Image (cartoon, rainbow, N blue to C red; front, side, top):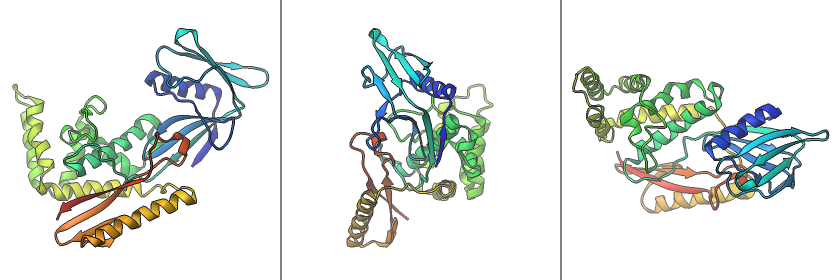
Length: 320
């Protein structure tokens, strides 16, 4: 965790970023009256938020900062203030002592969000590598390690990106690139997946034809990923995600939350044992079947979490 005092200029730049994306939030601290949080980037790999210390708020904080909003910083003799001019003539002024920026990087390889059914293992990888890419895009190269840099181009390979974890394509967010194709080629080569390498070679040849159609050329590569023959390729990429993630610490919670999480892990383990599985959490086996417990984690700052979100475990099973 790193905590720094943010300059007024940098504070305005970050607020402008959030206003442009219409994701600005001003959240009161539950622990320190007068402090307000501004989440900047919050996901399974990073918690980056601002804290306005000892605030005096004049006006009504809107549920969402939407529409055309102008913000300016007033450097009063006693302390600075942020003035928001909002639609309808509404005005919000927040006086504060200083602004602290808190940035924490965390492990993410044990976390899984099962938002879409089908091809869950590949959707898990797309989500994790997309999260790495987002860290790089929003926070710069200092936010990622060498192992992450080596795999983040995969989201620019269309057949991999097809397995979006959400109910919409990711093409606009992660456009196609030659780096993405080169990265998948390197993964297939390292995994010893000669069949997929041949398919990549064939697709590259099709690109040179005058009647080349990108979607038609990519379809066989897409369908082939979710086949048992791609097991070695999947396991290699997942291993690389795990190795990259393990450079960071796990999230640490208060004693009550930690005890509740451990109790839930024990419950899942006992249920799997009752079904005939054996093993050590989070990986279990039963004959030719494998089961892996994947978790959803809340943020370490409860006030910044989604309404009603809590720790959860889902079990992913597959046949060896």
